[in-house]
Length: 208
Image (cartoon, rainbow, N blue to C red; front, top):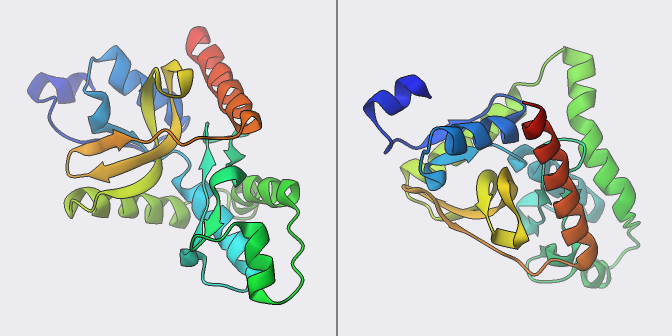
């Protein structure tokens, strides 16, 4: 960051290295870099895994599923069931549309989503394909000025009542980086999980 800021504060920076939320925070806050131009890969891969699991449950293409894992890219991440949907249908309503019985155990789905990364790591010793695809997705959104809504890590300054930490929330990503940070009306339980995730990250920042 010292080398980058010697020459520019205009470049869009994508942070990938773990702990990605801490790295994103330091890059933006400690170097006074425009927060919209520092994007952490955050929970973009976690969210893709969640959508894949839900899609498999319904025997559907996961591109028709809209669901996010938010918060820390780590153990305190959580699924936002209150805003999850399949082409506008709630997950519960789409069970009737699909026409067959679906076991929608949300706790189990969330836990499985978190475990996938560790399973890959245990079997391979590293993860590369998932995160490479995630980085590619962000780069595409920036380079093509897509204005896509992606769950990426960004420095919060009061959004969701949280500040002084970077974590994943839905953002409009364009050629400017994070064009807009979206504040969805999450359930109270989800807000508690988001605050807990922020608290956990702040404790790490304080130790650093």
